[in-house]
Image 1 (cartoon, helix red, strand yellow):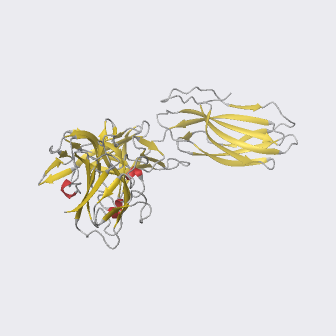
Image 2 (cartoon, rainbow, N blue to C red):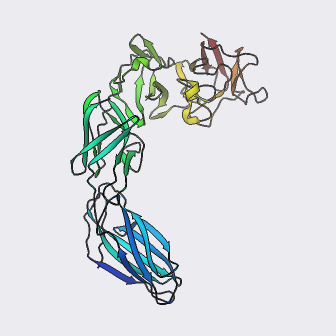
Length: 444
């Protein structure tokens, strides 16, 4: 008889039958392949490599292939096909997947010999499986590896003085003679197997606390997001990226909590005004998405409409976006927008259908070359062409397709450039209409 494993959602119990069974498949042509297991493990762990040896033959017919398969509840989870040019013994290896929330039980090994006339014979054998109890797990971070020690079945913990943010992935050591290292990383929402993307462990404060991980359920902790603006907690959006959607009024104080070293962050004055140790909202009243980028140490602020990013409305309200070259916050050298709409910059709406972006030559905008344009949305689509936008600036011109820039793209007047270190304010005025926009460029 054969033993199969029943792996239903979240680990139903195993259906067990005993022994091995050889099954002759109804022939298409002639011959009758035979399969004999020479060696196989009596049991294995999840995450193992199963080494097997099988002997195959036939009644005078040439053989074609030997297929080895590992099945969970009649579902093939690993397979290997070997060309069988002659009768005899063949060796191979199958990997046992390390699965979440699957208890110890029994899987099925299936060996299928096929001859050149497509006649097949199957041999089924049971394989008891169990979860490895690793002595420890490695939490690998940049510059340091921590050890999580086994506290109970499948449960591992690290307790010591730690920074309030610990970003790293988990590595389980090879377990047993045929074991393999198992990696656990972050998929954007939870811990998953087979990834080295850093898991964003976080605590409200630095100091002694416990990092825990369960190799059965993949539950991990802590993820205490201690970052908040005006009492509204920021949610994790990606590695070192946290965001919150807020309704803010112009000149409203912004109370920013939980960010160590905030005084060293770059502050976008178009949206946030810093006065001493206080922060105030500097754009018009409305709903905004604020994203804290801990790698670049700045806040990206984007206008919203309902639960989506805002776009330009027919009446001139909404939002304007920049896509193109020569501009980027907090530094154009390291975070240029380019022609990537995902990185588009939102101009700050300041009221009266006017929109503002403030840049510093040599820092957030290139002093000697710009080539960007204004769009109606944070994507391709509606845009301001030279027929929709004009400027009286003596240093910035609007391209018309014949003057060195594509229609609507901004450039620097020949022989001129922005003065390094100086601040320039670009203001788009839509009060005359969306097709009669005025661009003003002022050096402060």
